[in-house]
Image (cartoon, rainbow, N blue to C red; front, side):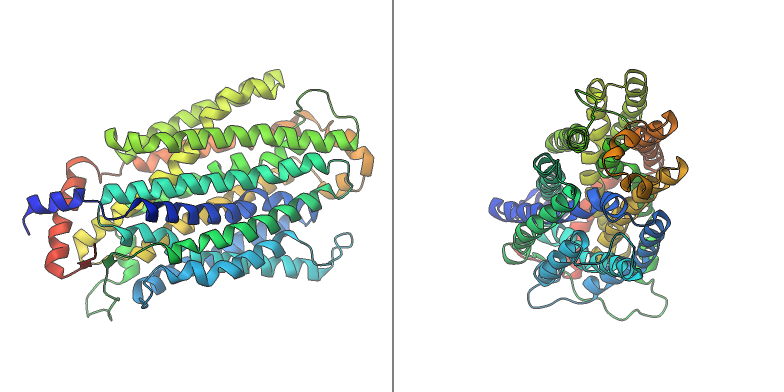
Length: 500
């Protein structure tokens, strides 16, 4: 097969539009459920169950240590064995029901005493949280590996990822908005938070997971990669190939440093409760206070959603003109500058509405990093296959899954850590019933500033750090073109089957 033929093959499209849509709708279903955990679990643990802050921090950290083992294990399982239904496709179907059940249990208390904090409440929370993470890994790693086997065309693959991430982001936005909207209707209830989170978890699970199974029923694996064989003497193992792939490790490091992007959404309910910001009249009653929480959180979440989706919509056009690396760097640096301006404007004026333009800009990296980093991982796997003859698709995608979980964990730790730094005792506040309004709206300046920083300067600094490793990423331009062109030839020579 000549190189010119390889170039023509690289431009060929393999995936019909209806299949791309099915994959994107499956991503929508996943987004509906994943956002329950990523956006609201800290608020639920801290302000509804009133769990001990150190317990929550340790739970998140220890769960991530387990993920450091669990994610690569899942990646290796995917790489080693295929089934008659495919290598990736069976997992969304197998994991859908367990994920739905565990998501509901994560936000619906089955009867444990939250006032006296029984040890069994803590055991229940820990078991459900860790189990959810394990089952989610078993679905997430294969699901986001699927574009690698749906098409050999890198441009088509990038567009599938971009479309899937964009539509999946819509699912996340729906989930984020739902408790806020429900919050307006239950604002006068003493257990308003309990109701809104129960509605969110049950409805999103029952809608999201059936949609997720479309990835099993409506997609096709066209690249038939042989099962991994026993390692020959002197041959590098899977983990060594991953850790010695320099471009991939730079993308992973960049992703870990970008943990602050998760805080714009995850910290919104915390900022709404305790930053002292309000829209309209200052709250004086419990109902007004609960309503203000929904309003402030809604403004922050809308900014995050609009900035994120705006970036996602423009990415396919940007891909045609700019390298992934440059898109990432510019968006991260722009987000950092915008976050600095946001905290200055917000803190000096106390007017949340004046912050909106700058919060929109600082939210752009949410969409960019979510999409572009996955496309970069796929390019890195092409590079590894070109260089070594092996393609560890599952393990490579597991790296990205691990990065996302680490990012969420770091964001959670930062949020809870801020409670401890500014000495904000949630249990004391929750014990004050109606007077919680006076207490929460009259925290000292340091406490208000600390909370506001969770959606401004802290994410901004994280974005600045995220850009640094990307300056050393060199899988671009002619080098990238050479890899893709020669890889098509090498696949033909190695007998890798690609179905139409």
